[in-house]
Structure formats: C-alpha cells, structure tokens
Image (cartoon, rainbow, N blue to C red):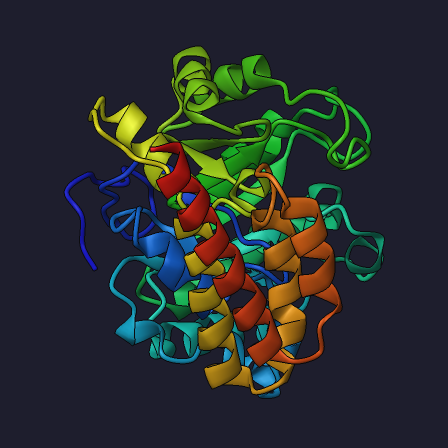
Length: 335
C-alpha cells in the first residue's frame, strides 16, 4: 500500500497516512489482532510480532507473515538477530510475502535475546548494527527501518552517533523508545531527549514510550516534533486505541469507544477467528485478550475469572452472550 507522506530517508521512500503506528508486540500483534485493529485504524502502519530471522529462514516463523499481501493496510515485519546472512535472507522472504517494510529490532531489552547479540545488544555493537542495516537495504526493494532505545545502561552513551550511522547506512526511518535497555519499561520515557535527537536526523524519527491515550500522543508530538508516535502496551485490551489517537491527532471529532456490549461482542469475534485459524489452541491465546478487555464494568471480575478458566470455547461464548443479555435487560429497566 502507498501513502501520501514521503519518508525522506536515504532508503527507499514510502508513505504513511497516519502519524500513529502499532508497535510489534510478541504474542499479540498477529494477523488476527491486526485485522481487529484495522476496524478503527485503516491507515495506520501496523507490525507483525518480532520474528527471529534464523527461525524464519528455517521455515518456523512463516505463520507470522503468511498472507501479508491480503491485509488491507500497511504492515511492517520486524526482525531480530545478529547474523548478517540470516537477517538479509529473512528480509527478502518477508518482502516476498508482502511486507510493506522491514524493521530491524535494536531495542528489545529481554535478556535471552540480548545475550545472543540481538535486540538492544546491538546498541553496544554498533559496527554490526550498521552492517545489518546495510545488508538488508541491499537485499530488498522496500524501506528498511530500525527500532531502538536511548542507550544500554545510561543516556550518556552518545546514541546520536548510532542514529546518524544507521541513517547513513540507509535506514529510512527510526523509532526511538525513550528509555535505556537497563530501564526496561520502568521510570519515565524521556521525550525531551527524543526531541533533541530528532533535530539531528534527516530521516523521520518516531517517538515511543508512555503514550497511552490521545492526550499523551498530542503532547509527545508537540514536545518532540517527531514524525509520528508508536503505541505499544496501551493497545492491550483496547484495539480501538490506535483509531482513537489517530482521530485526535487529525482533530477529527466523533470517535466512539465501543460500549460494554460491543467490547464483549469483540471478544467473541476475536475468539471465533482464533479458533478458526488455530483450533483449540486459539482459546489459550484468547485468554490473555479476554483478561485485558473484560474489565471496568459491573460483574467483569467474576466473568473474567470464569472465562479464563474455561477449557471450552463454546462455554466462553455462552457466558459472554449471557452477560450481554443481562446488560441489555438492565439497560431496558433503567430506560
């Protein structure tokens, strides 16, 4: 899919119609979840789950990128690894499947990934980080982007040097999480530093970290002057959040968050899609989404406890439909 805003990077240019993007989230941003997010954010750039390049090359990660060409909006494939050949080959494979762009993960703080030289470990191994970007840019005809952090241990590690080198290596866009690897997700994201680094680059910089709602997104854009914002954990249980933020950024009125009944129907829809695609295993995946979405209404806690313990997807649907009938009955009494 093409857009109408150019990515003014040294890599291949593409378009983005929305300033709000969905972060790659392991175990969350699969094709079924992306389809649901699209209901409210048709133009936003969404990402697959983070994919191990070596696994994809060996055929184990194909499920995460299957049928990308059938999706109705732009989708990026995020790859992590520290092996040049594996990353470049996986990038080509993702391109063949219909990826809109390739994103190289240089920010994941998880120890088992960093210990193997991937994710945030590349902040320290800058020579390899730059070479990875170069190799992938040479391997594909779609844009190559990077997601990283403010540093490994602290913010005095001259992250500006790394960002400039990645830009010169051909990265078309960089997403910067406003924390160091050591911080993980603790403390507060440093939007001021993101803004300072944005001014040093010629390519678009996307701000990431502590953006939970429309107000956060608007304030972050004002403070950083970033080209856009990337939403991560705020999407859990709220797949409409991207659309809500997009409306606010574009100053479009009238966005309506789903009511309780609609949220419960959304759980059923998500569950049915998972069962259709993954069989009984789909229920196990659905449980975490149920626990995130089924909240903030009378009886939610008790219902959630029943739902996440059930081993039968038919029983889950029955319980949710019963709650919907109860809510409708109470609504009629009140009116």
